[in-house]
Length: 254
Image 1 (cartoon, rainbow, N blue to C red):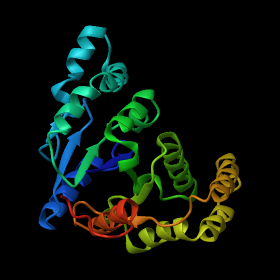
Image 2 (spheres, rainbow, N blue to C red):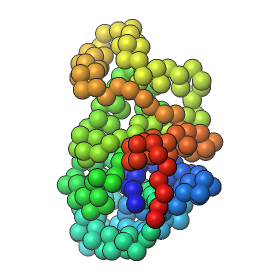
Image 3 (cartoon, rainbow, N blue to C red):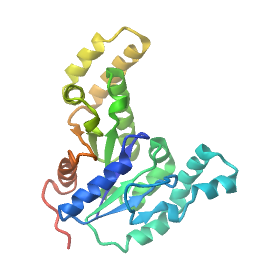
């Protein structure tokens, strides 16, 4: 089985997309299960097959360590690694094509703590990829777009996994706004030109330097507009994951 980790900033629509993608896979006859890795989730728009909350309760962490919600989230993120063996024992009982992993709402709690590497290795690094959600509300300006790109590149560098970039919640964008963001990612010169047109303020100067760094590392390429609400782009996520895992061929589970 192959693991698809959905990552992104808080509010980027990870859980909603995981639920919609699972429904799309079901309709397409592709077997998949969902693993919820967010111990702080109050409600979920899907029924998880495996749920970290069975082993970690945020309320119990707050009481045991005398912490507020933010501090408890940090401790809970580290406790995920402590409980990962139990989760893997449950996961080993499933025979499925894809494991859709819904990561914690706060991106930094999953991507930038040592527990993340332990978790990815437990799932199987060679059988995993990232779907990185860029929130359009954070990408409307050239500087905001470059900030989102930089964060995505750092996540990929940290976890050392192949990554699919998507522009989430594209149904909230006008056609012009969506096309502009797609052009920024596909054609670096378009982003560079819009940066030059920005006012010469400290943010723009930093943005130019980050743009140069991103261009040198080769992160520009393809980004896919996706809407969980309107079921837009879900087939492209599947095609990209098939390409990453199987060279584009349809996988046939034994």
